[in-house]
Structure formats: structure tokens, C-alpha cells
Picture 1 (cartoon, rainbow, N blue to C red):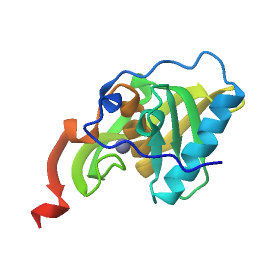
Picture 2: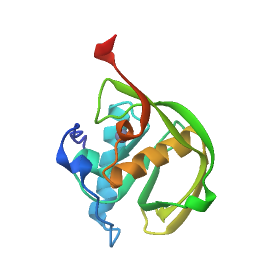
Picture 3: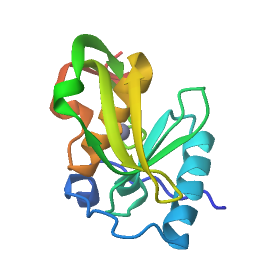
Length: 155
Ligand SMILES: [Zn+2]
């Protein structure tokens, strides 16, 4: 495993629409392991592949309940419910925080690291992290829809 370099805004890879993964290969499994190690070493709760310079649809999340990796994640719009506003940050935008409205509960479909279809029901912080990371795959950053943005340098 390896700790990868986290790409920072405004690197263009963060704004690109990431490509779907066509096959869950050894390379993808290694990418997932490296992304998890990178996320843990940076004290993050989620990471998307574009944040390590890989424009492919892979995300990892761990809100303290164990690692979850999803390949080609798709949020089921019909199953999203509730609205919640809470503070978010991003490892690619260090020192910046903002309040973002997200669905309180979501259902996300995708593939796991073995290539199996998986369906995850999430709520609260887990749901928020999944929405934040899935946004990254479409080149969307939380600052794009934050209601209020604060930088540490503003203090
Ligand atoms: Zn982020």
C-alpha cells in the first residue's frame, strides 16, 4: 500500500467528469487500498479517486464504522429523503469549511471491491460523505453549493 498525493483545488482533474470503471481489476483494488491509506493518514472520512489524480469512478468512505469502497456509485434519487444542513470540509480544499444542504438519507448502488453489485442505505454523516464523494466524480466540489463558506485565514 502507499500513501498517495492529494490533489488540491484548482487542479483541473477535480473538475473533470470521471470515467466509469469497466472491470474491477487488481489495479482498482490496489487503488482502493491506497485511497483508504491516504484518507486515514489525512484524517479524512472520505476520498474520491479524482482527489488522488485518477479520473475514474471510485470512492472510499469511513465515518468510524469501518471502510466502505464503492465503484461506479449511483445515488437513487427517488430514495433520497430529508434535508439536513451541516458543515463540510474537503481534503482537496484544506482550511475551508462550509454549510451544505444534503439529503438526510440516501440509497447508493455500485460495485464493491470484489466487483459485486452492492446497495447501501445510509443516513446522517454516512449519507453526507457518500453524497460529497459521489459529487467529486462529476467534478463538483462542496464549495459549489455551500450556503456559507469560511476559510481558516478569515479568522
Ligand atoms: Zn471532497
